[in-house]
Image (cartoon, rainbow, N blue to C red):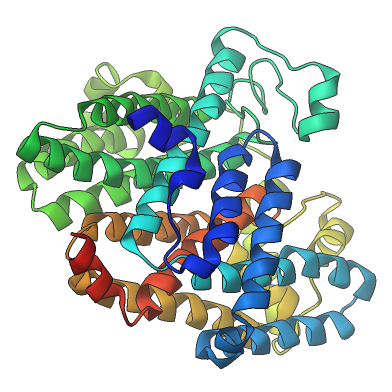
Length: 436
């Protein structure tokens, strides 16, 4: 039955019968991860360790994993010569354990059926996040103290910052990043499910669920007031339209987006009439008129300029992870935990060679996944959704840094691991045809 198949993840089979236990643990951990991060992390960590034990020889032979090993050594070397080594070694916790997880994910996630399953689990596990967020904004919901002790998150009335939905995440931008990639995967599932329903008139219940899910995600994304997420969703939606050849829909969406952008930034002769039509919530937020201008050190441009200066001063090994914060505070008397750009942060704190290797690894995996699109006879559109979902996170990290949230960091490496597994599995096409 539909409900049983979705709500009890361990009914799904692993690609390799010997990997049944870690596959079940991964599914179970992901299902509870947004609400119970610590418990979900334990299940995911056990799955990772089992895969490493079972597949160590295969892991050691992988060129991608060897490149990741070199990247790890560069990060450690950077920490040794950091401005504040203690801070830098603490910063390694945001990278090295997640590299280990990525390696296991790339070994475990190999088939279209597994990627389909993971996308469903992420969609289902997002439902309570959206419900809690809507209650937070419209009902003034607040979590009791014991929730923080048990789950590690706190639900604040009217969000964080006030007026922006954060739900079970620390900050609205983090929730927006989470909803962005989950929405993209859900959209891929919905389109695939709709095409199956149109041919066979089956799976109507799944299609109804996905429609409600996507509607809830869109409402939540609006309530996060994240301009970065809005832009990422618009670009990915455009990619979906072009990939499917729905040019009429692209024209309609482009007209709507253009109207909002003109109302926000266009010349005065056309802007005023459009502002009477476009809801002021959108154009005021996009144009920056909703909030008072921040002080100069709080601007992203100021942080990016300082990070660029750091990179130019120490281009090879950088200043060390977590060293941007004290250096920026010493210069501006403003505290910021990161420069709101992952790539500038890596260049400034770990050195330009480390940044280039990091981007090369991710780019190589993405390129192989794109080439693999032609090999998928079924679920091709879902693989395209995974490519867009990970690309959206990479795009968002050009305007913010999501790796400091353990859940988002895990999801990012999970998506990349799934793309790596799909692109490196030599028997993928044969399995796909057999299961079609």
